Image (tube, rainbow, N blue to C red):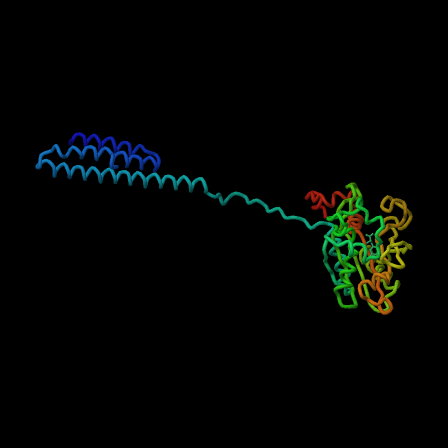
Length: 341
Ligand code: DAH
């Protein structure tokens, strides 16, 4: 029996020292010390010993048990120490490595132009307002005096959400005129920049989504002279003092009279060049005096109040200012493009 315990001691200590992970050690513990383990099997033989031999053997067995336990524990501690060391080495940070430079984004050139325009209007006492892109046909068309049969209401031109043509993606920022007149105290001076949507194929000058800026003034005694003076001032702030404008008669359902404003080409001074496509003039915006029917529809008495309004395309303005020749560049947001501004 003594020999059996000696063999168990040698075999178990060797196995424990050779084991390389803690799960292994646990199965060794079961193998040697468990209820069905090898030490227990040896102890079962105790019955065969004489009463004198038993205490000495019992002592030996207890010693063996605690020695095996101790070596398991020691090996276990060694292994977890080694694992920690390995982990620390793997996760070590080399503080002498050069850092990665953070990539900063770039302000979009179109928003530079928008900010400039906002500043100009804020300086003249205008308020900046924001409104829904999902709009009721009532606001996008009807209240703007655009009749049922008008071509811009066609399903081929406008993104509708409902079969009854009641809800749509706004095709212009002009519904913001109605929202302002219905919600605000008079007088009103506001501009409303934002996205608009039309069913256009993408090409160098078209996109199904683009931006407009709407502007409107409603007060007592407002005339076409205010419209012209204000817009001339804005144009001079954008394109420089002395920039020449011209107002051509036009038609919009929600203004009467209506006009389009051109600026004389700032590149060639009106002689005609590639920038103005040989015209000498560049079309900038549509404008007019708010139609009395539109005022009345918003509960404003056209005999007491009058107003003027304008709408202009923001992309076109930015393209002119930064000499961008393809509208698609504005929306692709390629950093190599944006970095140039
Ligand atoms: N909403 C018009 C368009 O998209 C532009 C416009 C013209 C707006 C005349 C106005 C205006 O406010 O008075 O073509």
